[in-house]
Length: 162
Image 1 (cartoon, rainbow, N blue to C red):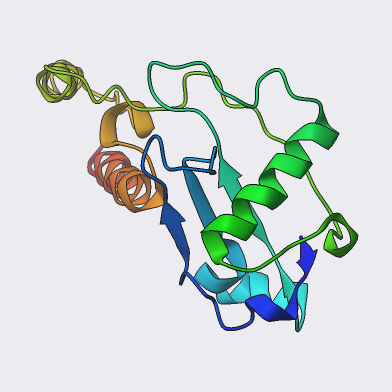
Image 2: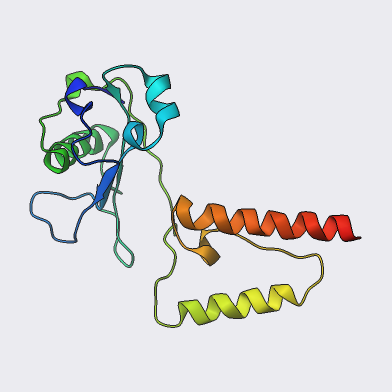
C-alpha cells in the first residue's frame, strides 16, 4: 500500500503483464488493485493505492525466492515504477506483505486440456463428487470464479433433487 496520489489517474489501468526478458523489469505482472476493485479504493482512501506484483514464471525458479523482505520491497518499488511510469519510493510505503505461492500456476503444457477433460469426465461419473480450482479451470479469478459457481450450482441442484 502506497501514499501515491500520482497513481490516481491509473496510468496502466488495472495492471499489466510483463513480457519475459523485458529490460529493467523482473516482475511478470502488476495488478493495480485499487484501480481494479472500487471497494478496495474506497477502503484505502484518496491518494492511497494497493499494488500487487507477481514474480516467477512457469518452469523457472522465482527471482524473489532468495531475497529478503527489504530486498523484495526495493525490487517491487523499482519494478512498479518502471511499469507505471512514475517514480515510487520507500517513504511512500504504508504497508508491505509477501505471499509465497508454490506450484500456483496451472500447467499450460501440451495435453493439459485433455487431462482436465479426463478428470472432469471421471468426476462426473461419481455421484456426489465435485471438484474445482485453478488446477482445473485455469489461473485468475476470471477463470476460477465461474467454474466454482457452476460447481456450487451443481452441488445445490443435486442436494435439492435428493
